[in-house]
Length: 583
Image 1: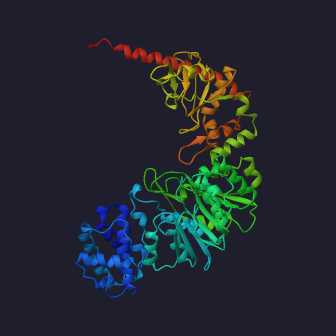
Image 2: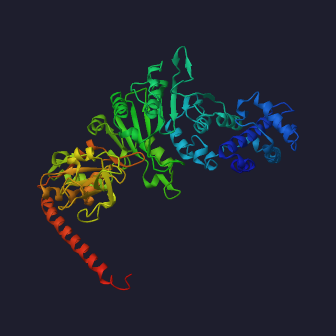
Image 3: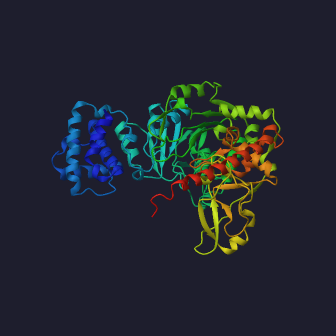
């Protein structure tokens, strides 16, 4: 019922755009709630204002705003609002006598915020419920909720008996209005938690029992936040907001932290790796939970939940794959929502070991380069079969077989040396790359200094970004370094072997279902899939001395021979009728 009422109020203010119409509708609903609770004088109560007089309505709202800051207006009310305000008051005057306003349930704002550019940050309802339950909230706990713009987490925490403190750098009116509408009691502070934290006493940051945080992804800060941090929160000099957020939460929490992060935190080098190492060394990382892609309304960034325990040492990190089909419900071509949360949460709480939960030691995480992606530790059936096969085979590290050559970094020139660029779209399903589809020009100096980066016979090309893991191979007739030579696009890496048959065999291995499963194990990425060079070179592959590898080179040659025959037949096919009705 509450969503229907709110939807009708939203309809009164549609001309203002989504964000302002949400605020106006909430202000009207909060006015009705203050009236129902008897918190306004008779002249300011909704029932005491002339419902058909827009001027009287405006004056009442402005007067209420002197007592409740949530009734401030970012754009002054004007003549355009007159009809809309009268309509909204008319709706509320119909609802007030029913008693619905006094006992209004929680409004699902995700149903109404359908414009990505109009709103700062909206949390999926199921995700808000999930992370709140992971906090193991008990009555009386003090809970810190930064970046909770719409008070979704605060409302959950208060409904479970906690004392909630919300801190947001953005407009807090929505949180303040919902506090009035729901009758909840929680603190609200408008401030940037990184630059100017609000909850401070006696020169120190206040310590909360529990922190729950779902911040916007991709926040960046100037480097001066490190120098201007009076509380010694940050170990890494970085502009990565996600790293700084975790460090801030660690500084203000006594017991448990539940924070949602983009997956780049789990594998990136630099400050992100330094943070991961510290979490493992301090034994405070309790859980990593991989979430389904597409659960956020306005982006498809891959994300995970980190659970930290600041009050006791954690011997093993629990990895949970919540991206499995049984925990997501498709709601569109690329969108999903979390599902079956009771089963998931109960399994986590009961410490059950199954095929989607695994406890991992610190030493295993260290051996994986402190990577924390769930798919590094909870393996698919296909990956398990590959690893079982490798246990009984002779293997070598890929880096010991190949020389890796990075692509040329260049800007196309109007005048220069004409060359051809190979990209992933030029990789054929079978055989060797026939001809690059892109023609470009290199600066003379770049051309002269890039001899090594020009493709050579039987160079293997692997996509490192985007369609990561896809492979192609250059044939034996590739032009030498010079005008008309071939180079490779920025998304690829060159794997160069000295012996052609070994190159052919390795290519066939990497292209096979077996090889693709191997490469899947080193693919990372929050928004775009990618492979890190260090992980690629450490990848264990079958030795060239393997029996199948010896056969693979000959099979590749057969593929190329058939490919050449097909191309010749296509030429003949094109020429059969070329003379008919020619112009």
